[in-house]
Amino acid sequence: MVKTSRDPAALIALEERHGARNYAPLNVVITEAQGVWATDVEGRPFLDCISGYSALSHGHAHPRIVAALVAQAQRLALTSRAVRNDRLGPFLERLTQVTHQEAALPMNTGAEAVETAIKLARRWGYVRKGIPRDAAEIVVFDGNFHGRTTTIVGFSSTERYRRGFGPFDGGFRRVPFDDIAALQAAAGERTCAVLLEPIQGEGGVNVPRSGYLRTVRELCTERNVLFMADEIQTGFGRTGDLFACDHEGVIPDVLIVGKALGGGVYPVSAALAPWRIMELFEPGDHGSTFGGNPLACAVGEAALDVLLEEHLAERARHYGSLLLKRLREIRSPLVRHVRGRGLLIGVELTIPVHNVSEHLLDEGVLAKETRDNVLRLAPPLIVDDEHIDFIVHALTRALKREEEHANVSLRV
Ligand SMILES: Cc1ncc(COP(=O)(O)O)c(C=O)c1O
Image (cartoon, rainbow, N blue to C red; front, top):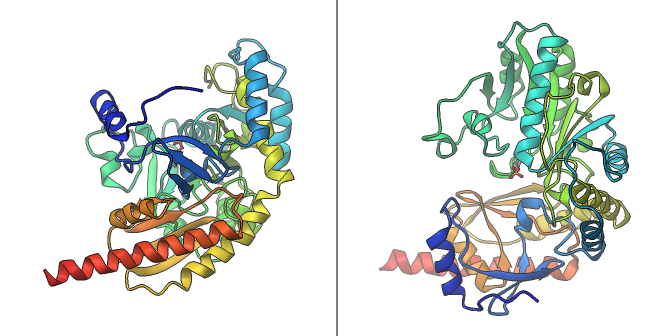
């Protein structure tokens, strides 16, 4: 057993003294977790509705995934891609089967997989579409979130993510999400790809209207533009289907995955595509010291097995619609709109989420904002009826408390 301090204030002070302050976390210090429950250093249990931003879809410390991690770590953890390892082939075979893609390029974090897709799309644009040198454009969307590298934040519509980090290179054209006319106007001769989250997670759980993804797919085919779906947050069952694109029967040209592929224990991501596109990468074009390492492959394979064998997508569909229905029944003047798909749910409030998150902590639930006034509820996909009850009651009480607090403030 690892020994750490049990004093939350001391641990927080230590972190603040030595760590960059690039996050504003809830002041709860988690020390262990199992399934949907995380426990803090004072022994308080919390139902985890943050789920590592959807990386914990299998729940914390899934026994099969942890067993795969430990066994592989003891045998062979890292080789680099300078030599081959015996876990890479089987993992890639499984991943391409599950995603219905032909070839995969394994990376570690989501942002790296997005960068991989961007390079692949530009290469395709120059070699296959004949776009003049360095003139390729990728269409992206208002409210997008694809990670934090300088290239990626360069095309964010969130000023806070960009401010002070320029200059940015260009090569991206941003249009409103869920607006076909805007996309039609933007996709031209120099467009190599459209990069889209089928449901915008960080942007506020924005679900496009039905038929949008299919129309984007058709437009991309018609204009000879790659359709690149970032399913890092929405993929592997989160929205109640294996992928959010599946809801509309859409197959992207480039599929970007991460988060839950690591089974909640290790960073594993990938960009996937048919060979007609992936063949454009040659030795030396791209890489990563850790991408495709044996530990990642063993974990990724176990995560895919558990996903399918435990029917996590079906569970997300069932419990997601139940949670959505129950949340919509909450009567509170602070709730403006409840939306989502599967177990990716946003509760839009009339006020900033912060106080409600704090009250939820007191009620034993971990949940945070995804945009200032949207509370994201995205528990592990292994939740059951009791957990759904727990979440709904906790949120009902948290909102009540905030209503009382607001009334008191009004009266004072
Ligand atoms: C849709 C999407 N793409 C990319 C990323 C970036 O992933 P990572 O934080 O692993 O780099 C995220 C993270 O939240 C995401 O939600």
